[in-house]
Length: 401
Image (tube, helix red, strand yellow):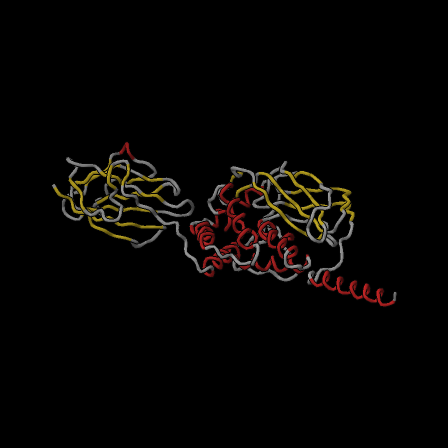
């Protein structure tokens, strides 16, 4: 009997060793908590009044405990609050779903967006939901469920890895859910980097793809996703972003304490250290509504106006991109002109005697600019992209009878 009891005791010790060995640093269990008031903010830009919030307590393995709390955002600053709430656990998942203020375009989003946050609420009564909390979520789940880390260790590691995508850092004691987009230039920078001029649907897909990519190793490997992020910031008007935020929050009586230099510094830091280049470039297609496009690569010869008409067409990336085209005569003969009723998204100048030509400036980026032109004599075409004071490209067009 003593031998049997000893064997059972040894088996028990071995089993316990195996069970604790697969949980690397997890402390034991969760703690029920009652919060007289539990609150937070949802910010992309700020979510609008009436957006839904779901709060779900989780066990130490991030499985649902069975109780779900539902509430709503109560103003256009993205605030929510729940009183006298009893949580079965100190770990919670928050989910926000709704429309938000697009800080890049300065308007309400064209679709609803879902964002998540995971938090340990033992010592806090407020959790903010934002792009950073959303991006770290899948990685935290993997680190806890598949690598056996504790919540605090997983949270810290995931936060560091997500910030590294953007080449940013935060002090150890600052969590993603504590950030406020009206005060933290870093959070605003991340928000505009993932937003760019994307639709809500496209941005939601981008967030999902980044989350999936970093889930198992914490590293953003996909070059297509990197290029999309670089395209998003290539033509941002950062002053306009800040103005949009100030108008939105100012109308709610809330100050935006973001320093322009700090905000721009974060964006430049990302651009300069990502290792990738934007792929959204100026496009001069082969044809336009007048026929062959005189701005297209390879167009160097045209016929006189009695015989043919041509297009002056350019397609600019949406955002803070700009283009000016100067066409001036290369000989004593006037180069030609344009058909006034065909002008689309260009501001066209009258004939300039000093220049001996005309200037065409794109009105709005993100939309095709097109006009029908006709040639009378040889000309020189100068391209001024993105506010350049010297031509970014020059070519001569020969005109034949």
